[in-house]
Length: 434
Ligand SMILES: *[C@@H]1O[C@H](CO)[C@@H](O)[C@H](O)[C@H]1NC(C)=O
Ligand SMILES: *[C@@H]1O[C@H](CO)[C@@H](O)[C@H](O)[C@H]1NC(C)=O
Ligand SMILES: *[C@@H]1O[C@H](CO)[C@@H](O)[C@H](O)[C@H]1NC(C)=O
Ligand SMILES: *[C@@H]1O[C@H](CO)[C@@H](O)[C@H](O)[C@H]1NC(C)=O
Ligand SMILES: *[C@@H]1O[C@H](CO)[C@@H](O)[C@H](O)[C@H]1NC(C)=O
Ligand SMILES: *[C@@H]1O[C@H](CO)[C@@H](O)[C@H](O)[C@H]1NC(C)=O
Image (cartoon, rainbow, N blue to C red; front, side):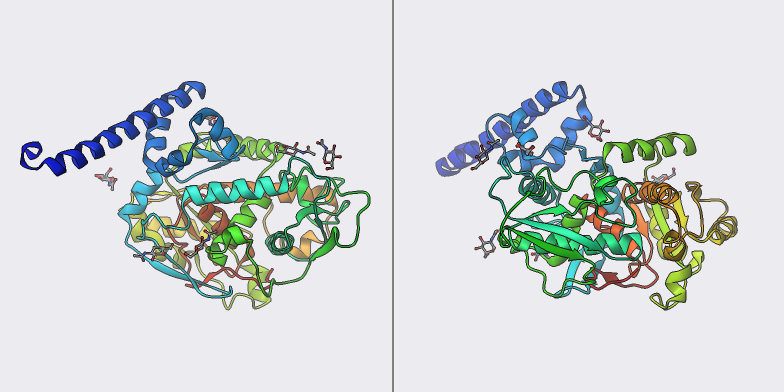
């Protein structure tokens, strides 16, 4: 045996195996502590063990408290209400061929290589937790007095995704100047049908500081959220080594954390319309949003794509990974007839899930609605966003702000299997599109 051969290697080998065993025991004990605290079992420990080792290494000696202090919205499986990529997702991802996609529309082209499982993978859950925790703490300081603020005002008059993206840019401008972002109240956000008329109507509050009643012109500035694009993005120094693509996804995720009322609505819709009544029980599934109508009429998309064109893109991969459930949404009702036809050709391989929503709603119709029906539509949008972000595979067109929202959320959650897109364009657009 090796021990007898070399004295030198005896020491290193045994020290190394001792530390490995020690680390294993620590992780296991920690896992059990958490497991019992959270009243849960093996699964969590396994997950903890497989995907969060790096995170654990960063924890201080009192793990139970540290996990809370890392981030209040995190509980090992979820970040706020969103399920993080888990071992099932990664198993599935490994069955699919490698792809490299290049995101354009930012300061430079940023690549994502789906087979780069190296520790430096930007879209790791650990990086997400660090970023989200940083953003949360920045926006929720212990004491708001003497802080500098940027009041976000003047929302864009455009589609839901477009307005949210422009709010992301305004938020980015506040952070770049080391300011806490707050929403002007009332905000006149087209999609905020509560008294504040800001994204806080449906999302968790952007900050727990209130706008200071008085302050100098340098302490408080206004930032417009209808600026169309962010011409020269600046990242806070802590993120200086990150790509713009990664950064914008983190900002978007922070701003769109669902608040409990929104989540309750979403869960109710899902439990009423889906059998079984939880989205977790439909995995694995592919989510497809077919954007057409005004997008094509206004020539932002060069053409509309048939449903078959989307299916042709993912069919082989879906079969390889045994994915047969497909969630489809579109503002165009016709898509569901196309599905029936396609599935006939595919001998009924696919099982469709969808939600009942008011179809044919586009920006031009939303703008003429009263705030109450518009609020209802916004909740339908967010239900769709939740289901899509939770999917394993995604298909759509990234010229659409809506599809980009989904793309951003899933990247933050650690899901890097690229979008299946007939446009074959990956955009992190800083320009304004509806
Ligand atoms: C983690 O959070 C999610 C969403 O808020 C919740 O559904 C889940 O039960 C939580 N898990 C634990 C172990 O607390
Ligand atoms: C993997 O991705 C990281 C950044 O995310 C990059 O630094 C590294 O060079 C990539 N590795 C390979 C082998 O492409
Ligand atoms: C804001 O939240 C932070 C973190 O939870 C807390 O420490 C702080 O006291 C809160 N501030 C206010 C003004 O409520
Ligand atoms: C916050 O800081 C201000 C000024 O430094 C101080 O007067 C105030 O008491 C602090 N508030 C709290 C809740 O600690
Ligand atoms: C960014 O990378 C440089 C060069 O590798 C390094 O010195 C610096 O500490 C990094 N900054 C951060 C915030 O990680
Ligand atoms: C897919 O399902 C088939 C039939 O149920 C099974 O034989 C096969 O092993 C599965 N493949 C994977 C990768 O799970």
